[in-house]
Image 1 (spheres, rainbow, N blue to C red):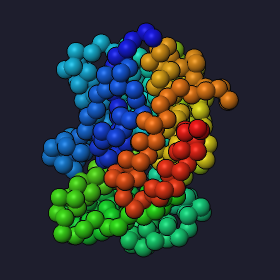
Image 2 (tube, rainbow, N blue to C red):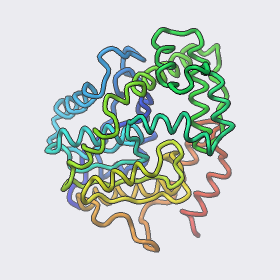
Image 3 (cartoon, rainbow, N blue to C red):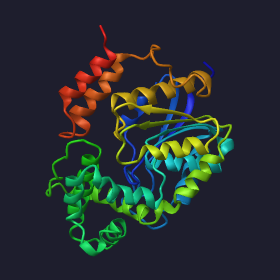
Length: 337
């Protein structure tokens, strides 16, 4: 092992989702010093939902300012979904400060990604798509993100309704059960949800201040930097072609498909690949030994892996997944005894 406490920064997705301690469960804490932060306007950053001075260049500057503040020379950058796009661009602009990159469920921040999510995916989930679009005036249905951005920015009284609709649409697109709407009497929960989607629409309406060509240029600049890509083969939120484009653009990158998985980061196949990638990087400083060849043993604690799914199904996203089904799948895969 080249470094028992490699430095790692986790870049959360959304945009607008904020960080969570649960995200660190893909890592071995004995091997990594883990840094998490909430992007501008997200999570515990204040003021919540703030869009002024909130753009991608500012986020990249924030990430590197955090590295400097912590006195870290270099670190391993891990990002999922929107966080994958942000991780790529950060690494491209700060190659000398980036020891490696791990991407999961990559979003390319282009209009094609946005159009797919609000329209194209309707061919696969027509009922969910139709239910969601009922909230959008017909004349705005070709520019959903622009209309929602305006609604959230002006404090439309229907903002909580729109935020609940967005949350449940995401879940249904990814094949998960919708959650009950946030209780109208829980002012803090509603404010948090509205803040999340205010940030998300602020970014999506502007192609995340990047656009797909900029993200792929960033990927193409990282030849020689260890880059691993994990993507669910049935991801209906961020299409598998996104991962393929990044892989083709980034010379020397390693790509692994999470079989039977969608965008959900805690699917057993996605979890296994992301955990094995972080283990491989901690051991070797690159991804030359990853992904593990078919049939080879994966050396993690099955109890730790099962605990992630049990914890998640019990507390993190209630009514979203079937606890018994998930635990059964986990045991079948991990606990063969």
